[in-house]
Length: 185
Image (cartoon, rainbow, N blue to C red; front, side, top):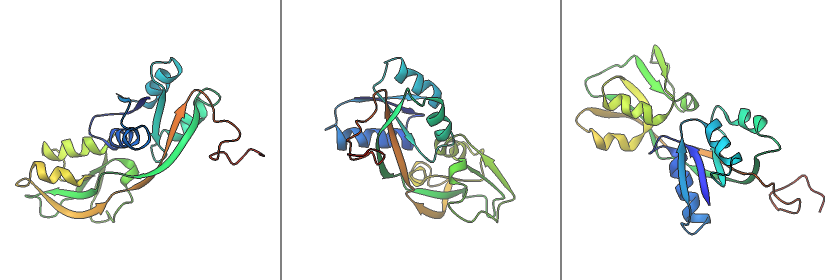
């Protein structure tokens, strides 16, 4: 199995793809990361990868389902937890007013104390911005605290997000598949 999913390296799409290979494929297979899902689906249709993995919380999920209907089919679905997330701030920022986040994480906690919300493409980008000192605060993987404990502080642990994931392939499931509820078997 060769899975295409969204990068960059270190994000939840990569984590879940590798977990999928370990748990469902005895660790056999590989993962290729793409900067956009459109490129991942194009690689699937061209036969460069065998599957595409996408989180249904991703902003482009419904567009991809529509755009690739009758060419890329959902063949598996499951629930998986992300890396534990946290609201993190710079140690020297006592009352940060700006918070960076990936839009899917916007409602994971109360952000009314922040006057400006900065949208970032990924939680990895939020972590990089925090480490570089570009963001006063942000929602990202809690593990980033270990990379700069003298620079960053924990505001609130949020735990892992439980999301629904879909695996796509170019051959649809058989009508008799237990995953299909539309078939009269």
